[in-house]
Amino acid sequence: MAHGGGDLDRRLVAALERAGHVVRTLLWRQAYANGLSPIQTQLLMHLVGRARPPRVGELAAEFDVTMATMSDALAALRRKELVRRDSDPGDRRSHVFSLTETGARLAADLAHWSDPVTGWLAAEPESDKADTLRFLLDLVGRLHDTGVLAVARTCVTCRFFVRDAHDDPARPHHCALLDTPFGDAALRVDCAEHQERDPSKA
Ligand code: SF4
Figure (cartoon, rainbow, N blue to C red):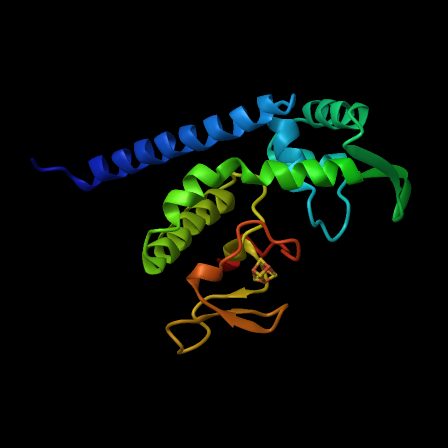
């Protein structure tokens, strides 16, 4: 059976769609089990460990949803006393959002939603996983550079990332912010220190 490159590309997209469906289903199960919507669940986990509490506009951009959708999700989480709203120290007319103690506890529990998948991945070779992570993040980076994905806080879209800066094959990349060499396996998907790079310099 002969398949051209275009066919392989389409099957890759189909496989990504299948994998995405599995991941979404696991997340939705976890969300409904806790009386939350999927976006509320993702928001709680997203607010863990933020160096600076975000505004509603930043969260809407990061989730690729409208301000109204994000405002509704935040209002629901505030009613459940899982999220608090404070004045933005940089601009008193704006507000920033962070987890309450109860919200932080629930977010830690929710983080187990992916255990069925990570449990299977644990037995797979490190090199395969590192190659797959780099491949997927490069795909995310291209989608971001072409405007398909609004926000990506990954190493490959970060202005501090220097690809293949070192001869060491185990740790070829460099983070200029942390001044650290690192390998594909350590590429970050959602880094609190991320700063957007100029796409024309990709
Ligand atoms: S700041 Fe974060 S996202 Fe940027 S290169 Fe360093 S580790 Fe990666």
